[in-house]
Length: 337
Ligand code: XMP
Image (cartoon, rainbow, N blue to C red):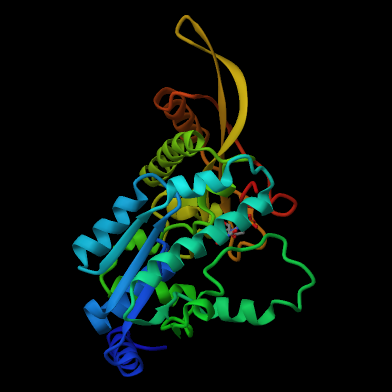
């Protein structure tokens, strides 16, 4: 049990001693771990840190702007924003197999990051937001006979870039990383966000990924998340619903561990005004879990689901049907791909 200001000053001293006057590169994803690592390293070495934020075109609505505002504008961190949407969409065209999609996104990510990193000639260090559970997990790899899904992270980079690794969160658990983030001035809302997979909307658009689908999905997803955040959860329900993040639940976003929309590239018939529509389907997924290995579907109030459905169908032209996923894990996984 450590005291946060002391922990921060110790960590800052350690980073300074480790890197000296060298320059450091960090791949910022917008997720909790890389964000907290960036904030901590920036606290320690300021402008010696350059972050590279690769937008693969499969991020949530306004995510790029949010990351650039928070780090660039608010915290004064040097961030290079790479919009690689066209490149990723090109590589993904015609690919429908989930694992093939993951591999392409992972490989492309490494490629884009390396190109950017290669331009920063002074850099000697690669910083990563590796946390303690990641250390344990990769130590266990290889012992398991198989991986159910290939999880994408920026592995293999230091070897090819010839950089030394800086991993200031290696000893921390997730809840400690979150507390550290808040103590470093990151917004609570950002630090307590649901996890988001590396391949992003790429695993939430079934089959072939197209920019048109990603644009529809982003808007539907944002409506779902907004309504979850805006719907308070009564205390009795809160107790019955079990754990979200283990924190005090105030709304359905906090009471769920992960919630998102999924794009189904099938068309169904609907009516709107006097006309017949023939448009795509969006599925809503919300789960409660402690470890993401098993999960229950969240018993969201019907009124909330109804409101989200109406809003998506009215506001997102191209979607005329919304369904709710009531599958547990196992047998279903949390993501649809
Ligand atoms: P599943 O779908 O396997 O997901 O039940 C369990 C947790 O892992 C996340 N997930 C991923 N995260 N890259 C990631 O970084 C991936 O390829 C990936 N696949 C699943 C998922 O969002 C959930 O939190």
